[in-house]
Image (cartoon, rainbow, N blue to C red; front, side):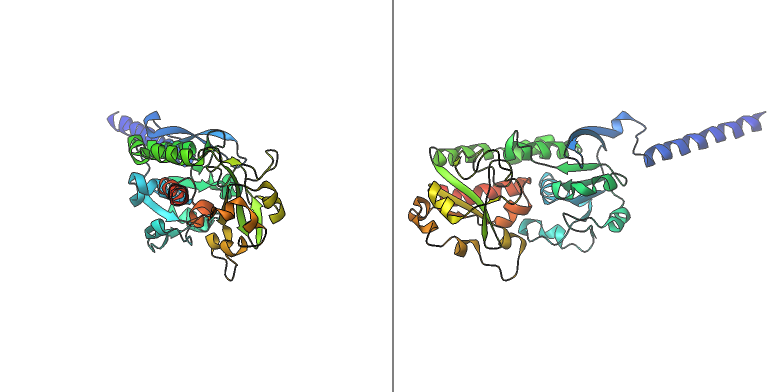
Length: 324
């Protein structure tokens, strides 16, 4: 009888272990204490609630903003793989680390390397949203995104706090961002009552950027009146191409330009400063007052928006020209 009971109990334990393993393989957790629900987005750009493992140990990071955040809050040692090839100097210790899996680019994942890295969580940006449905088959996916309803600064804080909450480290984010408010206030004071055109120089052309995507901090949080675009025009990606005659017709107080070719290292490309040094631009009030500003760290503005250090760099670029 004792032998029968022993065999019965052993069988129950095996069944329970198999059930737990199957639950884990399906992304389920055996205890609510082992999961945390965060708001993020899916591949269609829809806001979704996703369960992530609490205190994750293995992190696959294919977004520079997420990499920046994890480095700042002190969990970079849990990163097992990254998308390499970026020129962002403050992240090079990760991007050149041969011990980390090379997970592809920020647009295209290397699925084989990703599976081999065996991550608990995958971090991506909007550039990789087309691969979302495949990525979630490997591990839960957090997309670092900018919510244009609240702007770049608040979105950075939101993403940073979400990521930090996985480790119970939300207070670190408040400390890291505490001086940004006063810096933004000083920039607002310098921008008050002034107009600007914000654009991206790419392959010799000038694309106008609005308050709905890249560089939107200039018109939204800093407060320049962006006179370059109609609010109904989608300018969130590479801008709305415009002529220099149009820029002159708006005659802004400031011209801000992101140099995309410099940001992505296009060989042989003409730099933005040269392209904007032309007869029409030089007739604008911005040029006459030396207020044509090519953003010094265009690679950060173009590829790394969303990170804590990145936000500081972006503010520094503006401070160098507005608070001189």
